[in-house]
Amino acid sequence: MINTLNGWMLFLAIMHFVGAAFIFLGGCFGAFGAITLLAVNPLWGILTAVQMLLVLVLGVGLVAEGAMLVQARSALSKVVASDVDDQKFLSTAFQRLKFFFMLELVWFALNVFFALLGLVTALVAPEMAGGGLGGLGGMGGGAGYDPGGSW
Image 1 (cartoon, rainbow, N blue to C red):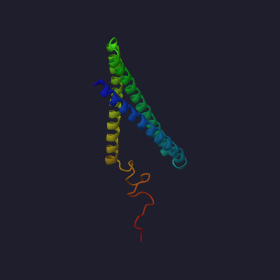
Image 2: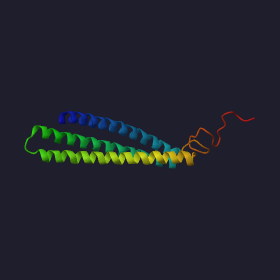
Image 3: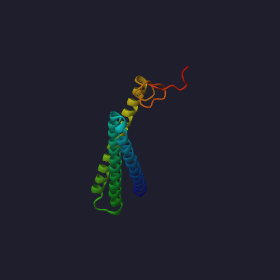
Image 4: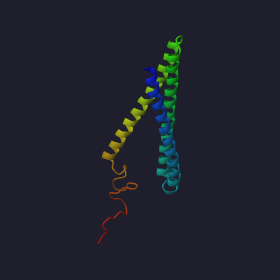
């Protein structure tokens, strides 16, 4: 049973590391976009740069979660191989798993917060979401947008 758990923990750790690599890649490309956006619109450039820093923090969190899973897996493997220090190895494994699940709880809470913030922003102030009058890149109006031409 522990060997099966170890296999799943290794799979999940690898998925965290792969996901973190893609997040780092996206954050780096987004940072280049933020730098170029600074010349066009400094406020949006700064906001995009802050967003990319937060994306990189998310990547670091995924790496930390993957590391906790690898450490917990290692401790559980030692439980299977040892008959003497089972309690010590189990304690280490559960400490690492506790940290892993606490990080998952933080990511979940942040996701819920930003989803609700985006929903409220889209409902209350559609201009801020880019869909209304005067929004940056909005498709439904704004200064100078005349899809049908005027007579």
